[in-house]
Image (cartoon, rainbow, N blue to C red; front, side, top):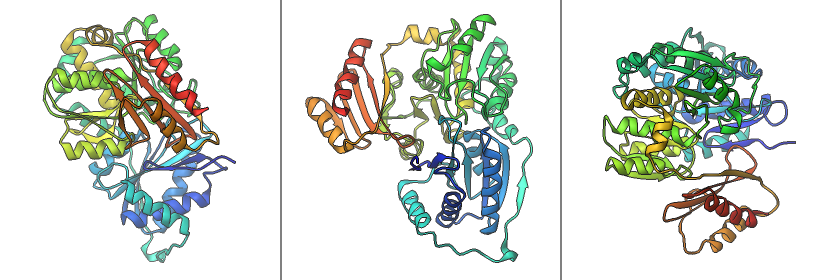
Length: 447
């Protein structure tokens, strides 16, 4: 039997194994008790189990006395935006993001449309584990509203972002390719790009939930998108994950340049219009730090996890930030990672600079950043961290989220995943050899 994964973003597991009706019931009821929500937005990605889980969760909310707004097939950032746009008290997203097809999950949002904080999550899990709930009688049962074409809200609000010169983008008449992995972004991402005047080549944009490639938008999964960019002479290719909160780029030569470039380009696009602090997570490339330094603005790092970055951005008044896995957060719209915002900001940069991602890459320092994961074996995580720290004793250490070690223009970040039973190791250095050597040193302490 697999393990139910529980973290600040919610719960996720294999449907019928660890994600069961009982698990759903306990956690949804606990969520409603913690938030006090009486109006809840619910959306889902395209997984085959999503529709059934939406019906079940919607019924639970109504039986608990909460009204439901069902937005149907929707990206994670869309649901985050709709919570505030529709004046709801909370949101539930049914999506397992980059996990394989047999998985599904519940992501819990508060009234601000962001994930619950650590203290709220701790309370939620404690209530869920108790299994003790009180339900109102039939006279207090909630209602359900089916919202048609909820995508229009997200598209229109994205086009209204002041940092995005819509007319300048339209004037370029870009030809672009989109790979939505047959997920929640299959309709909305191409629609946004067409509104921006782009000719769109669709790759894997049938939202049947049958992922034709690996769900994560990493270079090894983007062969078809790269081919489409070359075959159709596109200026850029956009790849999203199943719930479309992450966006990776393929340049005009058909090369998947890596997820880290999305945030770096988007950050430069914003800072060229409005200066202000930038916040990223501990695992993000220093490319974004270089951009912040170029514009003379503050730069900070937060723990990995969308909510951790969002809360630190709120505290520091950041104008842009996010996570290097292709997740751009733009407070001017909302405090969630958003692939629509990512694509629009990249196109705005391209229109202003008369070039694609390859131009940005040529004009900025580059770094090698291998991202690896290893099965979490019998060795205790604390023992692994202690051994790694000893090996890197002359490096600056940050223990807020696993173990982050930095020196000069290099770093290595070792942490237990919140979403998979693995240890993640990310290293970065000016050369591939240096970065791989850092990973190898850590791997030796894991095994």
